[in-house]
Length: 313
Ligand SMILES: [Zn+2]
Image (cartoon, helix red, strand yellow):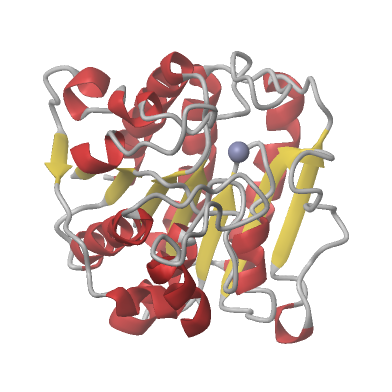
């Protein structure tokens, strides 16, 4: 069974009138609007976990900073993208909790795979700071949670958001148990994601960045994506797959200049699932990252989830 996690409070979260990370991104992802009658979809709910899940991926001082930022009168958590709202801590903790709830159900066999339609996104946040609308790193928290609570060993995080998954890579920079694989448009925010960034120490070779030129469409994208994903899956043999699923490489997305369509996100999901299923048994958790055209986001999420539901079972 495939699980879909969505929460009305996060969907309606306001972060400033000029921010492209708008509530509509998640409002259009209400389960009934994505799936209609929702056949074969288990709609899941989640509540806030204790704050200690955050320490799986973040330093105590940073967690305290987010908790207190509003009362300290801070306007931004970073240089100017990630706004401090009165409940930024509670809502960001709630978003990070979604992946833990989904993982409980995946690791206990009640779900084969799941998608969490959450805000704020997470993949730019590193252990010590917020960045680019990201407060806590939802994927990193989920990976560490699977390891600490369920003894998961090797975990592969595939990040196909159009921006590099730099925060996630920083969390696991020296760690060979989590392979981070990021596909993104070259030379885009936050000026990371070069192909020579591969991890360090014991983690050297367990981070991989695949920058692609602006204007890349389906053929060129998949020509790179498929062999890289297949090669990494075979070599690393992950026990669990996480997807940092941003949809801002869509042709109609205003954040970048890639040329993918909603069908392409379905095809990418198929490729990743087929490559990893022999090792993961289909156990897959996908977390929403970017995607700034709500209509394109809705159809892309639908294609992604249909493929997940079909192939992880
Ligand atoms: Zn992005």
